[in-house]
Image 1: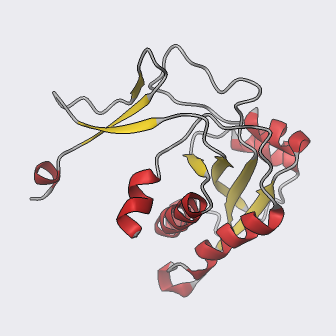
Image 2: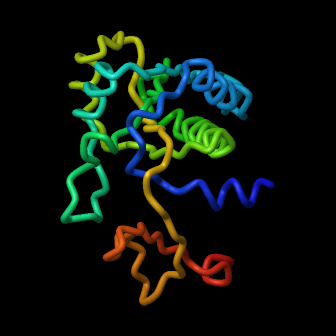
Length: 187
């Protein structure tokens, strides 16, 4: 059921790094983005699959992890993503594909949940460095990076209290994500 998939689709930041995700599975996930709506049906998004340890390490070095978790820099070795999908665009101005990238990202992450995987969308990417390390042609703009893997953390949805929307981890290392009540968001 779609509600169940969406509720399970939390930004996961720790994974079983040794769990391999086959290229065929990543292609299936990207196919969901291909089938998703695209503004004016221009289909300007392109995708780079990365599930090689050496390439993954390069991508990992270009990402900024979990800004709200001040005492946590990033996943340790052994907890890093097993794969990445880099969302690229043929459009130089990435703001023109914002709707497409949002739809595609959600579609891919829901597909990942169906495969019992989780992911995290990264907008905070050192794009020039990533382009250089992976030799991404200049004709493509880098939009986002999606990290994927078998989840190694528990994530719990909470109700927002005192307007505090920052996620946190408790003493048992459970990741808590505050969400506003339905009646608070409907005008």
